[in-house]
Image (tube, rainbow, N blue to C red; front, side, top):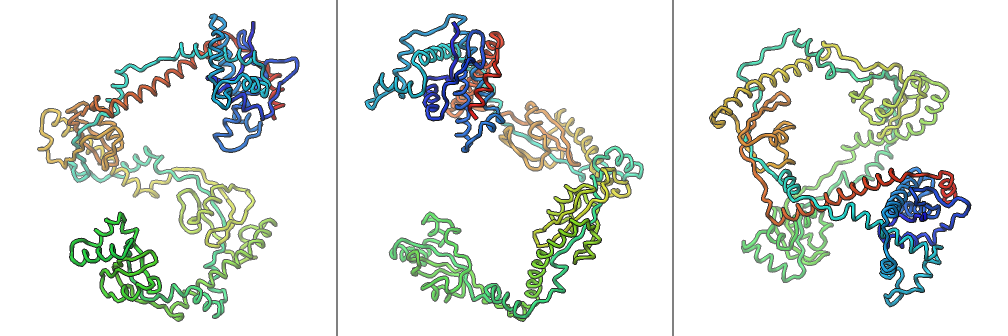
Length: 613
């Protein structure tokens, strides 16, 4: 007899949470002639089970994401298909349990139900009344629910039989632990152009031409757009903008703190909890028993915690007179502060400074004019937009407004002039010939518009245009090739028994280098190469015009018997065992599904999905 397959529960508690969670959500019985959305072998997946599983999947996703989902969004994320997939997997397990005659007795089912916290009363004991009321509230009858429990227990037995008790062999963890924790001691020497055994000959024109052709990718001009633009910046208007004396004076008065600064002191304040503590600290300081920094450390503080910066007399309150009486660095106190008795260390004197209005006027006039120019430009944006909407080109914009025209061969390497503006670069990158020009606003108040007249495809730059770059690259390559040969000669001498210390090389050493180590001044494949060598091996590497001779001195195996090693291997074994169990279980259920065969009722699924929306 076929059984109706239920939720995606692995444990009884999850099953209960799913059923009770749906009680208030509005998932009801899906009536009609069609009762199943799928059949796996002899086991049916009912429409109600599918509805509950989809809703549970959506709720779990909402909890993780912290936001509500519409059913259409849930379908876009594939949540309905994920729920159906789990139901089919569980149906395949239930079908296999039937095929092999695996079931559990009433006593096991009863024990699972009685142990469930959801069916206990206020005294903590199983309550038949609570059990029946809970099932009634969720619209599930006792026979179906208990059949579901029986089926889930049988499925659990199957899962554990397939994937339970897996354990990674000790040797597996030990080998990988040794691989991960092994370190190496290395000696190396870097050879540069100054170490060449013979000077490098200057390249001929033929050498450079051949290199230019063979390495054309390095000398390509990127796709370039020939752009015409119209541009208006505050600086273009500032000289002709009229600014009144009152405006300049108001700007000066509004920023008077920048122009008139009283005498200041660089001060640190160390606060104590009582006068007695502060007095004792000052006595010890005066006696030379401690330094001020020692006192700061005793308070559990850093110098940054007590730094007041540069302060005026008004900033120090009642401590002002004593601190400002110091003309040389020193410590005064204890003195009262708003945080309690304190010692004050004065570290420097900043003399009073005053920039008169007359001295600041020229700069203030430029600033005021630039502010006015920015407002004028903002007010002109509507006019520019109207002109562009009417089909104006860049020349007409310059004729009808204060904008100035220009052109640029723009590509990703262009950063000068108007291309220094990030907003212009973004607009230029997006623009294509024939696009409608729009106003571009810059952070400094400037505006611009542009049109693309031509797009020049990427092309190899002529040799005469990149001659210096080609010559430099050729020299680096030739130097590296020559150094590789010299390094191989020296490396072979070491392999034949020569002492590396007697070869007049600038030697460097590294000890306990792990696989994740980074050694400054070495090529990118340095560590990888080191861990491919056996003790005593010598290798040659090269990069960026230099060469390296590397000798592996020692391979240091990790101690497998420390507490930390044992704990790491145990945790690793547990993780790998769990991963293998999941993979094995997945392979097993996929095989059962293929063996049993799956029949889907798309019409039934569509009907459920429609009611869930």
